Length: 114
Image (cartoon, rainbow, N blue to C red; front, side, top):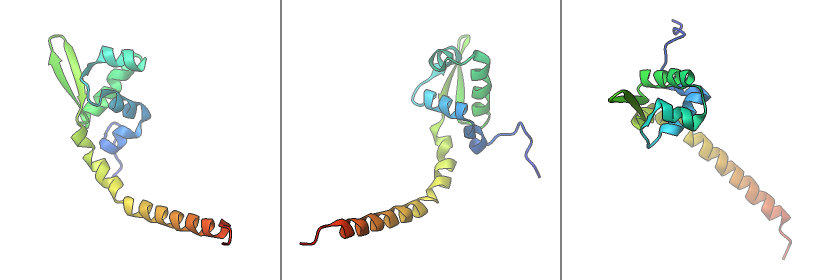
């Protein structure tokens, strides 16, 4: 069954570069929409739209303080992405080992005979 266009999960949410930038902007901080606008230089509706998507998937939480809303990253929610990427480490390590072997072979060929 195809996914509805307005349905997001963590993977689709961070697939958008602006949302990844928002996560990076908020990591370790708690900021208002106005502060995010000042930092990113994006228009407020764009910031609010992307924060809404990140909030929908749980990557960002919102806290009301008076008339302001403060946003912060829930970094623990990125765990599924880390777990997904981890499965590729074996492949990457194999590629690096092959590269190391290849470079060692080249160095031995180029080394002057003693």
